Image (cartoon, rainbow, N blue to C red; front, side, top):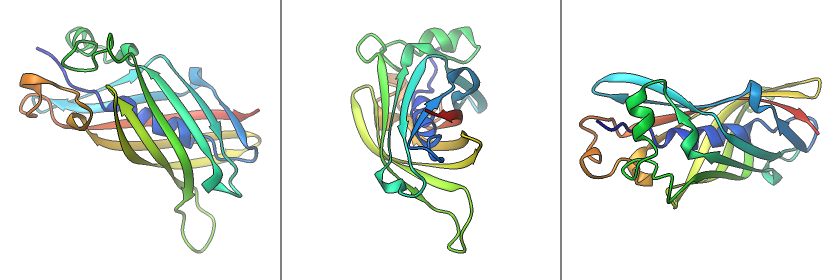
Length: 193
């Protein structure tokens, strides 16, 4: 039985982009202490996983978030859930089709603060595109960002419909076994360059 958790990587990309806003313009993501994950549901049971290979470039100035830019590139073959059957199915043509589409890319073309009008707050959105299986869609990743001492910690979640990106072909496209809704989760740590 194959498993569907294809859009999760997209959320992870968005989270990586979001980790950038802090005192300096350029940030380096600490991938060893960051997590790009995903969640979904199969036969009514929740599951989660993560991408173990990805990289990100982030430029963000909190004084001018709209001018920020970030790119997250994910190795789709690195998706792991801890379930052998799912992990063997994800790279196949019905799901991520990693031979034809080895990478997924999240590109944030701008950021915006969505904190309260009273000032303060740590809520942002990364606005851009997510490309999975060669299908590019506009997305907005909401995230929180805390910056102190040249270090940034960003946490976000992007909700997606996997079939919008062609994930889950054939018998898997109707959501009966594997839910269509998936979330990409991001927990990033970064330092100023």
